[in-house]
Image (cartoon, rainbow, N blue to C red):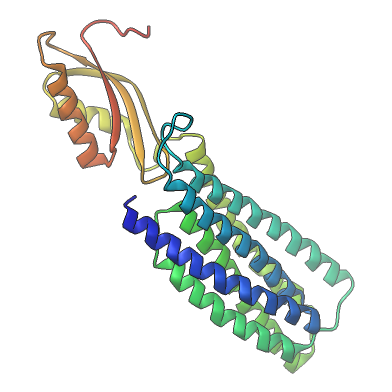
Length: 290
């Protein structure tokens, strides 16, 4: 990722952090005064949003540190770790909302609809603003995606709270509050699981999901005449944007220039597959690892 993109992402996350943290306090007070679970659930979500955005901001700062003797690839993976933690925190939020909703069904609470409507409407405006800020960042960055998913959950929570407040004001039907809280929790659950799955895949050094390894090897063999076969191929990423590869390449001609072959292979990997860091081992006989 370029420094310009990294700085742009960090600036967006910082602005979102200030807005979210400030309104979280407002929503906690509004939730307590109105007695609304939907508002309190959204306030609890905004609390984790604030922590998630703070973690994302720290991750962008740490990831800019250069490699050293202990972390020779640098600190880019910290962003993925932050995204993974954010995804897990979203799953915990879903569990808390479902628990509180069940208690509300068993023991209904009086909700002040008008107070709830005012606070939820203000929350919707803030969440839309924050989501637009984050959505304008690097959409392939899991750290930005994790933060945006948190805010999207807040946005949905604000919409649910507004709908619940209107129903309560005009009908007095209190169960709408926990019902809509559960609906929002289910929407958050799907996105949270996707984030956890994607970030875990990177942390486990899985190959990019879009990459067909066999097709890539066939392409290399067809494009570089000296290449006879390819094996021991490993592809992973420090982040989804920073891909790495190692492979063994067996050549036909023992007299072929290995440096020239490596240059051709690296160029194709970089230009067609976006793999900027590759280590290619040239072999003229049986594999040394067998």
